[in-house]
Image 1 (cartoon, rainbow, N blue to C red):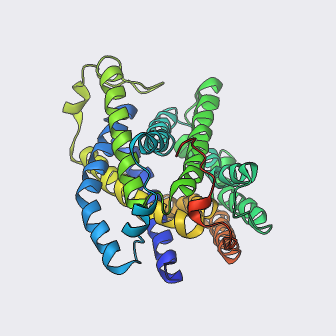
Image 2 (image 1 turned 60 degrees about the horizontal axis):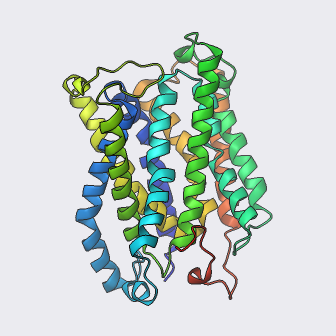
Length: 359
């Protein structure tokens, strides 16, 4: 049963708020925790939280057949389990968790221009749309969606126009050009992974796999991969291209309350609640429109920066750029959802061709 439009809007806004706030908490935590270990910690916390809440969500879904859309009867028809589930969970863990979570902190440690980062990260909806178009999977993308995606990207560029122009004093430290290019490349790879993850999720969600089960499976798989990688790498020489962390896990002693608070938020908010909301929206809106939340994330980050860090203080007329950017992003999101696609009658979710062989 489809969710009420207001419930979808609330889920979309909540996901934007949670994901937008995650960047601030990542900035706090990465000062103490190496990127791989930060990824491992947040995924372990997220997997534990999902393990506790999943039974409750399944029972709620069986009783109401809506709200969280967990249809136990549909799962019994054609369950995705065993090797196919492990393969899907591992692919999602790498694309949606381990790779982007590790690359974003590394890129941030390189001190790259925040405006360019925001624009590159906002390419994930376009990447998802290109993958869907290339795969030619039903339902097809509407013609109005492409202008909406371009408008959203333009809005992000306007929002960070001052930073793009190099007028932001917060990122004026001179760095080698090679570091800058590498940082931008890492952000673009992370954005591509997030876009691809949404497309894979749309292919497997439905009668074959509930969103609760996928969230738990991918986060648990990601936790296993990240813990192994962090134990192998960060124990001896923490992975970072610019920031130097103590070896032999000595960085644990330097973690204060704010660092632990950031890690806990990233686990409960960014790795538990965010994925539940993401997969709900993938089922309701499709991969491309769900990833459109990446247009709203910079808006949340900019507003929080102004409210809590006074980043807009004394800018005067220069505030017209972020105001124009926010208005453009909101217009893009309205256009994207005004052209909400409806599946063709012959393309039920269970009949979509899986992107992972054997899924």
